[in-house]
Image (cartoon, rainbow, N blue to C red; front, side, top):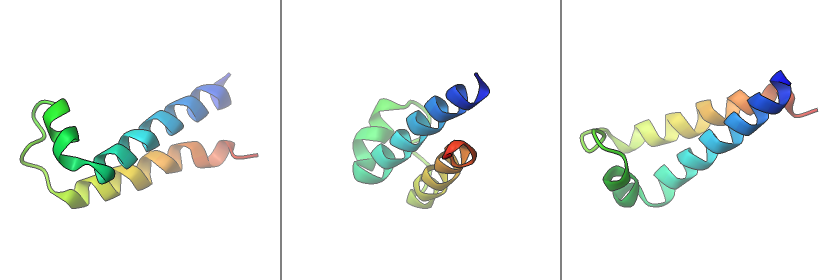
Length: 58
């Protein structure tokens, strides 16, 4: 059950990170309170979110 949950969360969060990188303007508009963050935040989020799903790759 934990592997399934970690996989789902990891994939959803990684998709969010990709959305942040692909169209930051739309993402900043969609999520309130993040208009002042830098693009590097998007890269770090995408990497860390993908790492959540890494242990369940088998």
